[in-house]
Length: 164
Image 1 (spheres, one colour):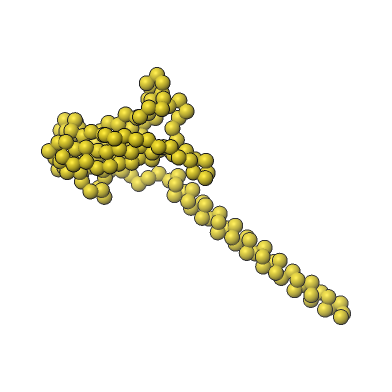
Image 2 (cartoon, rainbow, N blue to C red):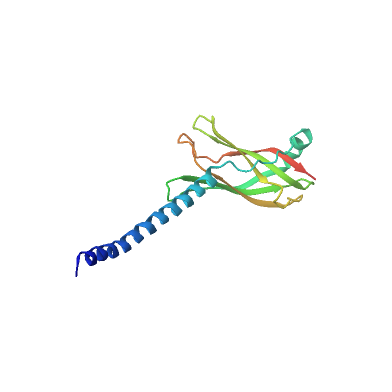
């Protein structure tokens, strides 16, 4: 066994280590891209919501919309991000069908001051309409409630309606 055979064996022994390092680099790049796309998708603004009118006719009809069976739940994911779920039932005790419903959800502090205000669509263009006399469940996910929250259910009020 000569000098050239020894060099050739060293080159062959480095080949698996170089391949393994290459595979690790590719896995890290692919994993980084996947995490980055998930982060961007989660933190990008939602598509623009349709604004529903809330003139005198809609304001008068809003008295027929009630939110019942309100429940809240809290969860934390593996990234230590807090989520609060507000769920309940929308009751339409009026005589018209709702094709759109926008609400404002407000959380308060112990002094009853608003500390978080979120606008949401509970019935949108892709959702089935809510017929007169019917009810429909809803759920809203909020990412973080301020520490000063009074741990009471939020107030929910109608801020937009699309009526038939």
